[in-house]
Image (cartoon, rainbow, N blue to C red):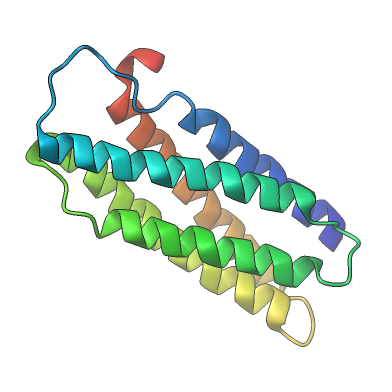
Length: 155
């Protein structure tokens, strides 16, 4: 698989993440505390950032001279935002969501490290790339879990 195909694969995975985030955070008619509202607002900002990253990924020309650098920068930003969400103090009612956020963050960090290794090696490192994909897919699964926990009716 060439690098252009790999970049397109990442675009599709991110598009799935963004699509799933559209189902999150719907109001279920439940009265929420200020802490819960603040936490949900932070999560909403995170999901909106995923949309921004989708636009960034879509704008990358896979054949472009700086495609790898642009991809890595976007992955770095995703990992950083995931870490920020994982570090939030969650209300007790969102403990499971917070646990998934921590797992998502850990997998995004692994993906980030692996992708950097793959693209920054002298020769492209297929094994590191495969590890990055596996971690990225696990992060995607944790995001899906978060969304399910936030909006169980969307299943």
